[in-house]
Image 1: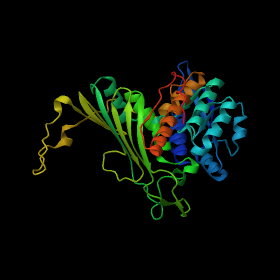
Image 2: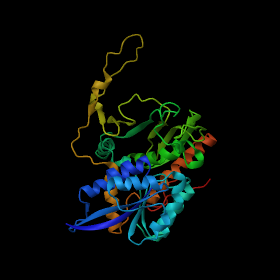
Image 3: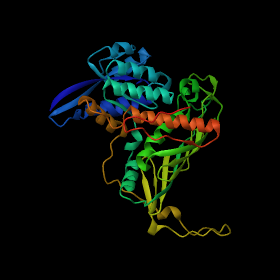
Length: 392
């Protein structure tokens, strides 16, 4: 098979997500398998170009994996005609300007979420990318989780009948950092750096829930800072300025409802860190990152409320796990393969920057709902290419 090299600039690869999921488990894994087949006897082979601010860390990563090129100059990379794709996994506050530079340089762009710190900035990027005629995309990794794939199949096959409600539970305890080191970077807790669980996670909930259950029509949300003081990577204390938990009710255009609880200050008592319970007239399911359990209408027990006696029903035993009857690849890697193929063939990408802007829109409306203490309608997209214009 003929090898076709595509040079990919990775900005922010020294961070945990950029390094582990995007470089090692995606691009380097694609190289190890021989590239991405294009169907014409050609294999697309990604050549990473590492970009970042820390010269020492970039050099160490490059030497560890035998990569020949790294730089602290984004302008240098974007000026190189051999570089075809720009990928951004920096801190949120730095992302918009870098992506806009890449779009203006004519590069295909692929990016982590959120696109920008504001809905206006995200929409500006989506419009610029469309006008440039490039292939552009946003990471939507949760669509490719095994548990979500199983859940999507249940939805598509009509298992639930009419979907009534969805309950999304996400989160875990992030240590404060004064004793045990925090599992998340300190910038996540600083609003001035683009931190906060609403801006970080609601773009995920938007694409995940709309993919499964259709458009979100309204949101009522409250965000809060449960732990107001933490310690950063150097051991220095700092005041938290961003939300670390959010609680919301979403209304779908279909008439179904979703309750969403997301917190970095909660201890886990569920099978997985993310769980979605879906209840419908025909059955229910509980899906996580990997597992999905179902209970059909005909298997539903008949509980009777009686607090004076032990409950005789073993509720957990009445659920059945959906089997792993297919192979599941790493979700980040699967989407990288799809994006690289689209970029190489100069085709539109399904999960483009307009869809990413829609996620930032939901986050912004949730924050406005919390600030104003009211339900806010979510405007539908004006077209399949662009989210609706939103107003303050």
